[in-house]
Amino acid sequence: MAAASIDPVPYAPREITVGRWRVTALQDGWLRLDGGAMWGVVPAPMWRPMTPPDDRNRILLALRPFLLRDGEHTVILELGVGDRWGQKELDRYGIERTDTLEESLAQVGVAPGEVTHLVASHAHWDHIGSAISERDGVLVPTFPGATLALPRVEADMVLDPDPIRRGSYRPEDLRTLEDAGLVRRFEDGEELLPGLFGHVLGGHSDGSSVIRLAGEDGPDGVFWGDVCPTTHHIQPPFIMAYDVNAGLSYEVRSRWLARSADEGLLGLFYHDADIAFGTIAWDGRRYTCTPIA
View 1 (cartoon, rainbow, N blue to C red):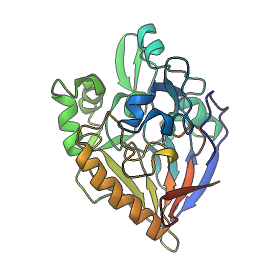
View 2: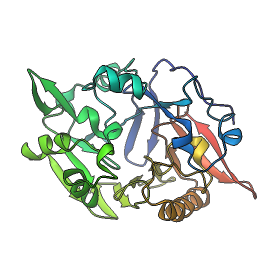
View 3: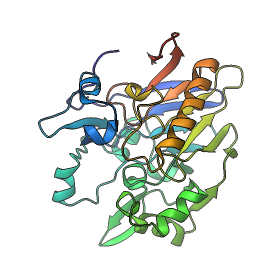
View 4: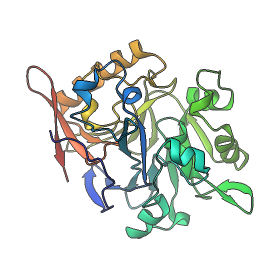
């Protein structure tokens, strides 16, 4: 597999179909996080050729929500980083909003008012940021007609985080949606919409999940969220230092990577700088990923 890009790639819509769902890759800009943190105990000589860092040891990561449409529902899966950031955060995390979520939606002909549902794999600030906007100094839902489905354990942690987890969440985001009656808490295995299932795994965060799209007559799709943030992280031990329970991460990643290879799942990747869609296979020694679309 080629090394990841080191500079942002211009947005162009990419699309596949999974069962009843037409799936379009969107964009909410980019961020750069410390390579050591993104790779945990993996030695730098192994990860740097795959994800080359900048001069501050940060690697480029996409912020790639997905649009799901079935003729009845218009769903945004994962919500990007949003624009409520000061200069210090923009510099620290290398946030570049070259294409915002609303702009990429417009490119594929969807207005915010047409969105009927939101789904998040977990609630870290780089995954639900664009669900909220600030207007005249007041926080409001960006998609006022759409309810956000979020793992129950994750929602509870957002509203009352401990010191270890506090830096990963912005409680005011979820409170704004809750005050508007726009939050749905889900449990492991729950069907969120027809053909759309949330699988709560934990490991990366308490409620970190994968979202499965039923394939009907073809293979299922799986949105990896931060369980497998890029196509370069598809070996079970390649666990981020950000994960709050590395042992559990190894367990759930091993199980779902094996399932993906066995069933030929169509993978949706949120943070990969280049690849939105790919299939994982086992070559007898390690997992490989083949891009699609």
